[in-house]
Structure formats: C-alpha cells, structure tokens
Image (cartoon, rainbow, N blue to C red; front, side, top):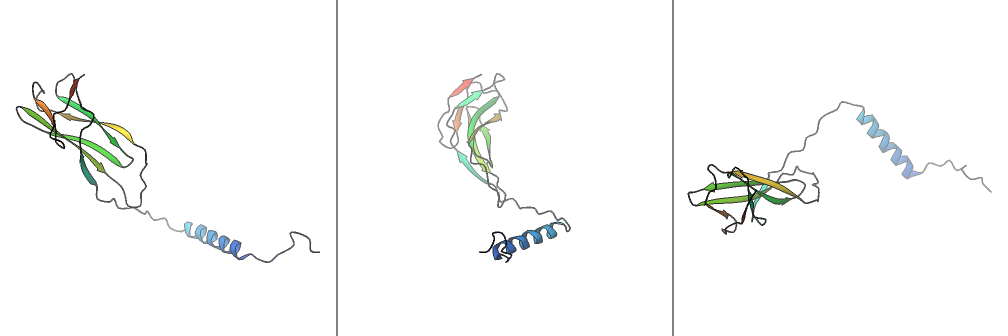
Length: 137
C-alpha cells in the first residue's frame, strides 16, 4: 500500500495554472503602459416631464426631477415666448466602451433659469405639448 501524499507526478491543470500566473507576474514587472478606453458616443433621448415643475421664490428658476441610471444624466432646457415657456427634458447616456453602468435608478433634480420671471406665462412640456402643473416654493 502506498502512503498518501507520496504521489509526486505533476498534475497538468496545476502546472498550467502556475505557468500562467508566473507569466503574468513576470509581464507585470515590465514597463507600465496606460490603457484608455474610448468613450462611446453619448446617446440622448427626450423624456416627458411626469412630475410637474417647481418654481423657486426668485420666479425665474424652474426645477423638476428625472429618473436616471448609473451612466445617465438629465438636463432641462427651455425656450421662452411672451405667453409660454416650453421645457425639454432629456436623458443622456455616457458609457465608455466595455464599461458596466450601475443598475440603480435615482431621481436627479434638473433646473432651467428663465430669462425673465415666469409671471402669468404657461409652462409646456416639449415632449407632450401639454401644460405642466407648477408649484411655487
């Protein structure tokens, strides 16, 4: 009967693993080069404003919220006339090639500064062309 632990034959899988790790360590000791990943082209979509608008006490700053994910950013833009303010809410995704974005969703506050106080003008949602409810702070 042969005692345990006395078998000295090399095992192919272990030998291969040791060779690979040794090669990586030797390679890592060489000159370091910075690898950069190019950013993919940002994609942007217009979103309906579903949560209404909040008017700041200055009468010129309008804020709303947009649900965004890990590599996303919301933006609120507008066009003004004497009778209306049309707001456009967009969601832009900035993701680098090979990057994994967090799957969590959060609400971002986005604002638009009017050129003149809102006064009696109506706020319209660009995506739906419908008036938005406005709450004063």
